[in-house]
Image (tube, rainbow, N blue to C red):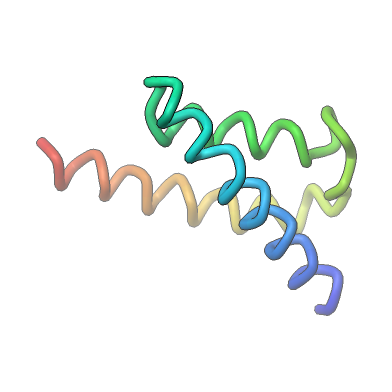
Length: 73
């Protein structure tokens, strides 16, 4: 459980750094979230290695993203 919370903190920290940079560059928030996830994931810096557990959190994130897209249309 502790590692799971640490993974969430790492993901949120990466998002807080990457999203404002991408928005300032004119790309928007979604590419910032994607790049932050790739950087801290096992393919990037490997700060998060619990792929199975974080996969459940990622599914929830996709569902919430779909609601954001649906709400803006």
